[in-house]
Image (cartoon, rainbow, N blue to C red; front, side):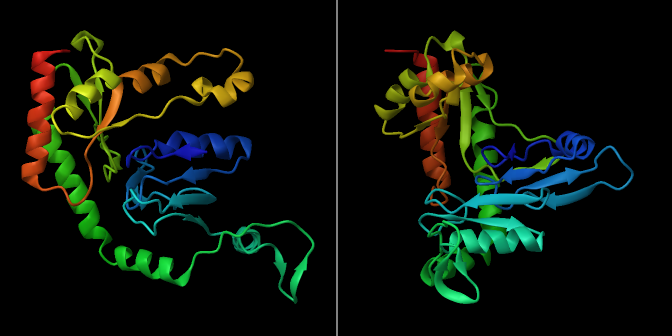
Length: 256
């Protein structure tokens, strides 16, 4: 399973090679990457830009409220495989049999998208280019203001990727004397809301028994030192400047 994080594509070429070598299927988690693009085959003679979600056997997208395209909740599964597509359609509709209504040989799910939700999503698809352009403008604005601050590591973009910058995250250096939670409190005192990075699955109490004391230092550090700055499409340039002013003030002032 390849996960495109925070709007930036995963490096797919090595994964595609690995899957071919071992006869594996690739499932893309593109929940955060609507419209993002990856340059496939960049080491060959004919590299090709392709949309995330179209590189594996299956892909999944989220339509949660904070995604680039939203229907309030839910999502979609994509595949070019007709058999898998029919299987997905059956599972999302309670596994009702095609030839006999309300007759079940398997247990399915009620994952049907309503017509209203579909219309809402399609309306956003029509302006997808504008949404992506605005997200990239916002990310560039943040990088211009904050990219030179030594205590902050802003999101980057590899030359083989076209990120949609779903969120504008940053990782705070330990030399700042703060972790992300303390930094978030300082920003909140300056009227700036933030969101923490995800906690590693091995640190989730519900999974402690599954991971049995395993350690993942990079994941742990990012979870403790990372947070997202405001990233909604409705933010104005002036509001982004206000956020950046608050960030700079906290970094310079240090923990109170």
